Length: 353
Image (cartoon, rainbow, N blue to C red; front, side, top):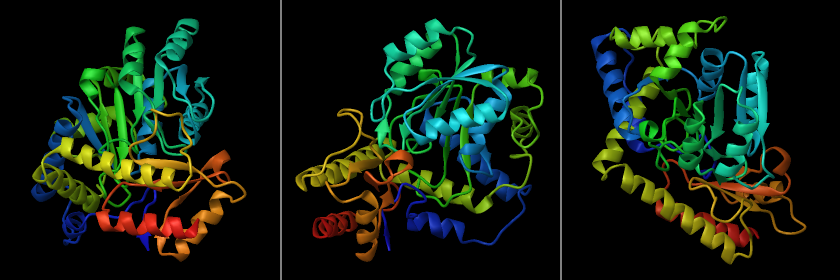
């Protein structure tokens, strides 16, 4: 089955080879060398001097950590789909008051919307933004939204689960306080590793936080990181090895700019072919995700029918998500994906339709 899912995605051969070695202690010099080399490569990739922590979890662990460590009472969550709603749910689950900024489905959050929301509710302590909303295939104008957020003096949390590694992120320049992702998306590594950069301001908030638990206490992670001990608990060693291999591979192939161009070419090819098949893309024009296409199912045919028919052809796409499950299907272009596989998938889609 050839994978065109939105995660987990097919893994690069270099990643699988790096993950196939025998285990060693997470306190050994071998692991610590691997750990800090991976962190430094990620800092370069994200253009940040902030600490980067490698959680043995998915990115949702960082979502929870941002709330527990940095929000005392109230936060503003920008919701463009199911994963924005998850961020709001996590805030409420920990007893925080959550204000929601939710444009119509398929439309981005605009700087004007965010400016109005923060002006009307100055008591929020932080803004949470899903950079790339996987459920609807939409990317938000993060740089502009970050500028508004910082002009109001708020902390900024960015869910970059399906954008980190697939499009530009300038953590320090844009003023992102917590920027997190997962291994199983754009980097083409198996699931199990949460990746997150944490600013000095976020760590200062964590210093004063109460009832923040232990596993995701950012100050504990900071202490182990500064002491050269890596992580407070056992690391997902194979995934860290895979992430390190992915970052080395990207550098060897010409750097992240060429990698982003690769994703843009893949995505453009898929979207262009879909439109030639008389199908349309769900989100507003100009805000289509570079890593996943959310496609309106043809009239009279539900998205699940297209998904099941493509499975019979040997291709695993992604079903629509949440309220769009019956109306759409999705095609991811993350991870290991030879060009010829894209051609075969598009030919099969034409046959299925």
